[in-house]
Image (cartoon, rainbow, N blue to C red):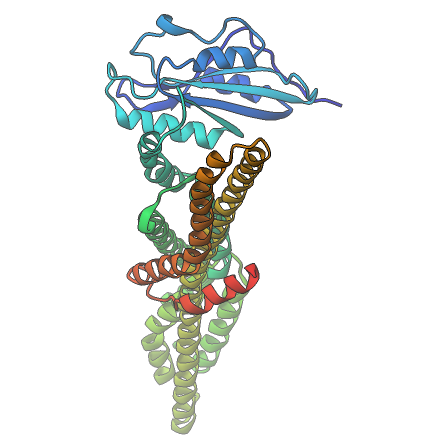
Amino acid sequence: MAGQTVSMKEPVCLIENDSDGKLCVVRSALGILDQIDQHVVVVSVVGLYRTGKSYLMNKLAGEKKGFALGATIQSKTKGIWMWCVPHPEKRDHTLVLLDTEGLGDVEKGDEKNDNWIFSLAVLLSSTLVYNSMGTIDNNALEKLQYPSAESILSYSLNQPAVYCVVTETQEELSEVHAVMEKEAVAIFINNSFKDEDQKYQLELMKVLQEAYDKICERNYKESQKSCESKIQCIFDPLEEKIRAGSYMTPGGYKEYCNDLKLATSEYRSEGGRGVKAEEVLNEYLGRKASIGEAILSADQSLTEAEQRAEAEQAKREASERENRAMEEQLVVQERLRADQQRTYEENVNQLMERIERDSRNAIAEHDRVLQARLKEQNDLLRQGFDDRAHQMQREIDALKGAKAQEEEKKPSFMSTALDTVGTAAALFLPGIIPKVGGMVVNWLSKLF
């Protein structure tokens, strides 16, 4: 059964500029989207102003009018307009058309706003139409470089993050971070291009690591607060007896030790203590050491030999607690080092996949053009245009050379990219062990 859809009579503004010039979502438009209970196909159109984008979107909507056309668009208009209509072919789908403000309008003179509009269109759409008068030349690609790298980076970094604090272990927090980090890297890798020298990818790695460090610090503090609260509650009866002097009697030391062990056991059985459970307990019991010594000295039921034995036992237990606290923190530090290695490898793996995919696509494009030219040359030869066929041979040879060059440069390009990432990343990920050479060999072995 098809879900609920909406059929709008006319477009509405989805993204607009507030009074400070910042882009923001129009709540009423979100309300329309919330009503859709179907799969959606989102088609965005971007391009220079007054190049026929709105006319094209009206045609896609099956209407003669809707999105404002030509001179009816005021130069001050900013943002993205939305039109939801039933999909013309798929009954259980809604077609969401997004028409963007024209890029490069000199009357607006706001290149940064253009960059954000373009980036949002890329990220929101399942199909992006870049509308151009004529071919998309190198100048157009250069203009798109900024939104395709820096703005995509900013979007990746501003994805909402929900972390679980207090986490019982560092590993739990690590797993949450790994999922969100992978998504942020994928958003960047899959939507950016011309990120020369991996400048923006390295910035993404650095900022994500800084954010994770802050989350970990917050987790430590929350764990400490939780542990201190549990200790205050669980050890309160023992504290009351200390204040009342109940242990300062013959046999009091044994009673004190039993109460201390019971409270410690109860504390360790409690959940929700987090990553500093043993450290906080060790600090608390360390502060109680002098009180235990005073109670032991006052216990006249014990001989001097028994008091010495109890004192030695107290030292052994203190040493055991110290070791447990140290082991707890070693586990955390080891997990953090593993996290850094995983961050490095996740970025490297996605980068190499992107490089390999781009190279494969480039070679396929060379093959497509080469086959077309060879067919054209054969047609010319069959028709007796030998001179033109021979002239075309130079173009064919150049295409073959470009394809060979593309295949030859891939290993060295991969190696250079990985070396750049490994060297730079080590500055803010000191726990990583770059494996550049081995990883390149590994990847190349998968390709051939």
